Image (cartoon, rainbow, N blue to C red):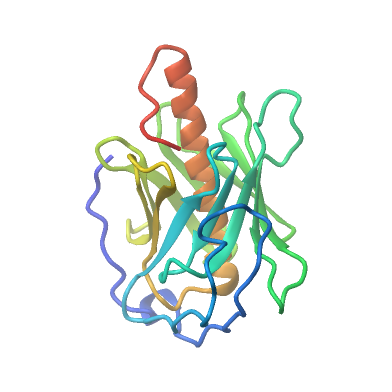
Amino acid sequence: MNMDYKDMASDEKHGLHPHPLPQRAPPSTSHNSPLMNRAHNSLPPAPDYNTPRTLHIYLDGLTQRHMTIADADKTHPLYTIDQNSGGILSSTPHMTISQPQSPNNPTPAVIGTATFHNMKRTIELEFQGQLVSMDSEGIFSRSYAFMSPAFGQRLWWECDGIWGADLVLVNARKEWIAKFDSSLFSWSKLGKLHISNGAISGATLDEIVVSGCAFMQHERRRRNRSSAGGGAASGGAY
């Protein structure tokens, strides 16, 4: 679904006031990822509050069950994503998003989870102990809505682009908050997550990442079911 989304005019309009982000020491991880094996000799650069912030999502291995989200410099990991198969006998939640281990964070901290249901058009999210439901807007809709604790308003994740593999998070005025651009033909990179405002951080950024990854995985599962049933093609190397 192609839509003409309006950029956010100002931080003040949306109650987003720039503030310095805490600098985290380079984390270590147990994932066997080329990104994670790079030497970390410096801290991430301070964000530019006047421009969007781009995060990079990498696949860790061919199983596609582990992913890493790196900062704009493509070097410093911000989040790790672990998935189970989501089959009948699998445990829940089906997706867990964590902040990786670091000297200041010796134990990886789970910041959110997602649980999917084959028979219901609902995705159950948990943001640091707070339960939130993402609900389909209709049986033929490719849009899921949820009440955002961080923004204090209803937000929508929607499919975008020619193949529907790109995603966009919008508010009621159709102003974009985040966009996901899929790397359809890459075996090592899932895509880029663009955040509309460099000032977005902390729990607000966590919420965008958790809800966005959940909707991304939901769409991947839907395409896989369609492909297995002789329907639409899966739409990319997820």
